Image 1 (tube, rainbow, N blue to C red):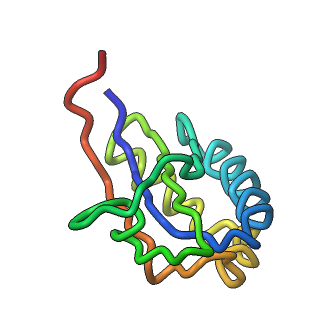
Image 2 (spheres, helix red, strand yellow):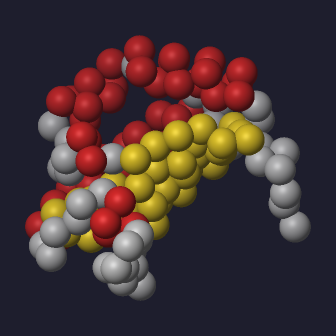
Length: 117
């Protein structure tokens, strides 16, 4: 079963097109270096909860939309190797320096799959 890197972040609505362009560019690079899949989703039904919610988790404001994304790999070891190549790839330098969102509020982590139906 695949290893998964998951991400949740808030993107200003006026930056959605720039974010989509950045994601397409980055996704091609991740796949080229061995990722199995690269998926980006824009929040369509993410209500602001009283205690917890996707918008609360990333401190999204009214002028931001929540993005939920994930990248899959064959294993944790393969993920580590792919990410090392991606981070060293000069084609991502500009994207990393000029992100169309606040990277400090991004939530991310690696996950071992345990069930796939």
